[in-house]
Image 1 (tube, rainbow, N blue to C red):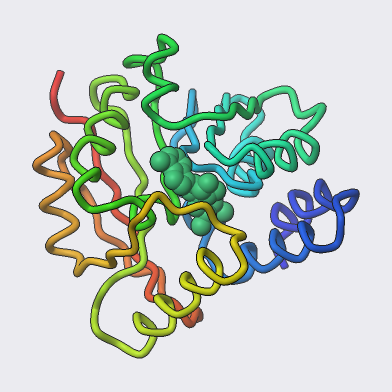
Image 2: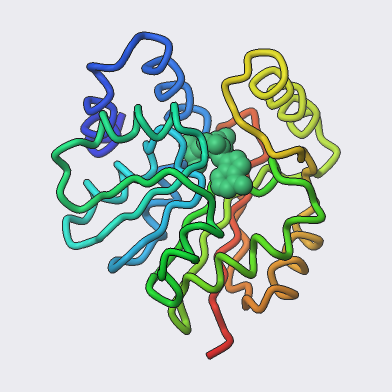
Length: 222
Ligand SMILES: C[S@@+](CC[C@H](N)C(=O)[O-])C[C@H]1O[C@@H](n2cnc3c(N)ncnc32)[C@H](O)[C@@H]1O
């Protein structure tokens, strides 16, 4: 295990076993280190931060980064706050991306990371969500959007079943009515329609049983 991941997971040692298990499962089932490695310095918004493991990696990797995690799930926000208490360059808030923007965060961020969040929203809300994320970014600011690719593979079908268990059966993930996994060309179009320039589409599925794909995009509109 990388020293950075080990350091981040240590933060969760004091949490109840179910929460620790959830965070460890995230650590080994999602390419969070690869996302952190591609995230620039400066001010970073972690939209839908959940238990805050990606926020922790971003903050611990670069003490000069200011990380602002936000999630509407009050339980997860409480666990994230507890795990990251005392880490000076990270702040966790309860709320949605729209509420963050409304709190005066317009154009403030060098980067936004959105990891496994968009597909939980109804597709009709994607354009508004992406436009709001863009509103948080400075001109030229970078979006790192990690999605699960709808490529028709067995990994795609397994991911759908897994999310159904997490959302509907166990209630561990709060969805907002969505569960659409898109092929990468279609997702790239959503990003472009929202005013982003897609710089890179990175296949991060290797070594995982989920077809992870990362879109690196820039807020191209001044
Ligand atoms: C699968 S978890 C991913 C958590 C974290 N990003 C990670 O990678 O570990 C999805 C998160 O999206 C959050 N979420 C759901 N609807 C949201 C919305 N409308 N705005 C922001 N976050 C949302 C959920 O509360 C949940 O914590």
